[in-house]
Length: 232
Length: 392
Ligand SMILES: Nc1ncnc2c1ncn2[C@@H]1O[C@H](COP(=O)(O)OP(=O)(O)OP(=O)(O)O)[C@@H](O)[C@H]1O
Ligand SMILES: [Mg+2]
Image 1 (tube, rainbow over the protein chains, first blue to last red):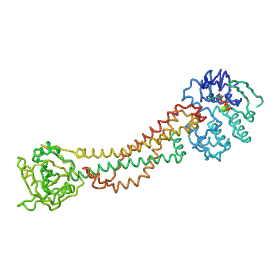
Image 2: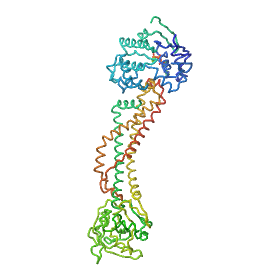
Image 3: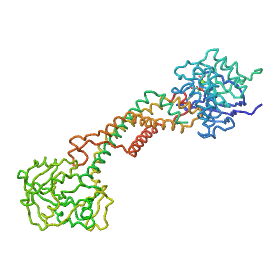
Image 4: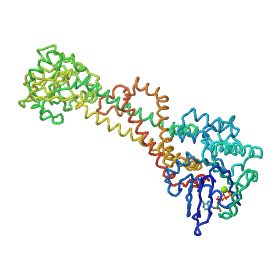
């Protein structure tokens, strides 16, 4: 088995709330090898988004250990975790979170600007990413001129454009029709095979689940099932 | 990179940015105009005072105190040889100052009598009217200014009695005739001043070729042996006038300080609103790998860009105005021209020095930077995960 890209030991997350806090994750152990194409499933409120945020170094755990891409997350300072995200982690949000004043092209270009990539190279990468999600014709539009599905595809392109080692996708297909969902999943699977990029999805969508090589089920913040599919 | 993003944000923000830029550029236009006006005033006053009063600097008797007329009889000396030779070459002009009184319409009016050679060509004072034609039954020709004429109700051709003491303390009286009422823009040459011929005033004071002031045409002619005199540069002579202009400048600036403050509030407000409305965006930028420091920088630069764009807008929108006031000038309102400050008699041509333009811009830049930076403490407090969800 390949080396673990994400290594989680006895992880817990306590949200501070009025009555002593809410335990969103607990006693969680998980190893995700490099090149995985896997899903986190579970009922609403089971902690999927919380876990993705912690893996993506956007949030801190309350207990336990987590190592992402060889870094102990708890030891990273703000600058180091920002650099880790900029270089190696791509996010796809349920609500896309596109920057409203930028065009589609500029939205997708932003992660490359942060990496200070030269312009010509940037252009090539952006066009490639827009081609993957089939939205090159809308590159001059602004986010508010896009349909929900188009917006989601742009946000996928933005996550993919820098070819990160790890892509964290929270309900990436929630706003897409079946055809678009399958297209995009095909694309992501292809990228996964070609580049070895690791994908972690949080999803309810059966179409997505069908694509996964491995499905981890969370219930009330605990790992309930860990199914490894064979044959894919 | 951040600059590029900031420019995109500002342009993407559309008319909202435009309003901020316009407000700022109105403030900038006003500030530049105001500064230009006062700088122009100072320059005009300086030129006029050089033409009418101080030349390119002047010698003053070391004991002279312009506020104490009782000392004036002692504060003159025979003109030193070197200066005398300059006077003979037409490079300097002596002035003798004495206290005196006149009785226009029978009212006693204290005056300053100034003797100046009738053939001098350095100062603008129309001294040709001081030439004494009839040496026998002497009526001394005298020149006064329009303000003096207005306050004493004197007219050209009027003959009146003027009294003064000679240096031995003996009272003397002359009849003088107003041969010219001159229009001078420099009040100290006008108010309470009566100009007569230098040689005749010397005689009348029982002096010989003595002077209180010696005005130079060119300050490169400074002499080595100045004896009882000391040289006063034009800069020193201007200090009082500049101080008065600065008082006016201050009250003018107060208005723009207020406007600038309002612009600052507008930007501050825009920023607070922007940070609140754009918290999802902030969360996204953090997820994409920007540090909070970079985001704070982004928002601050966005604010500063308003003043950069405003500077551009100012140079375009304000240019016709600046040129108009720079070329045609601005006439100071009447109530101000009654002040005893030179430079108000003719329209003042605004003067825009590079250092003034630069310092005004930097001031506005600093203030917008401050106004856009202060609200960013909210960014530092934000949690990325909350911001992403649009929570505060
Ligand atoms: N900031 C917070 N403060 C308090 N509780 C929170 C916070 N964020 C999430 N929670 C709680 O933690 C639990 C897990 O939330 P999470 O968003 O991870 O669920 P999820 O599995 O992603 O659900 P969904 O499928 O609806 O997206 C929920 O019960 C939620 O109410
Ligand atoms: Mg969720």
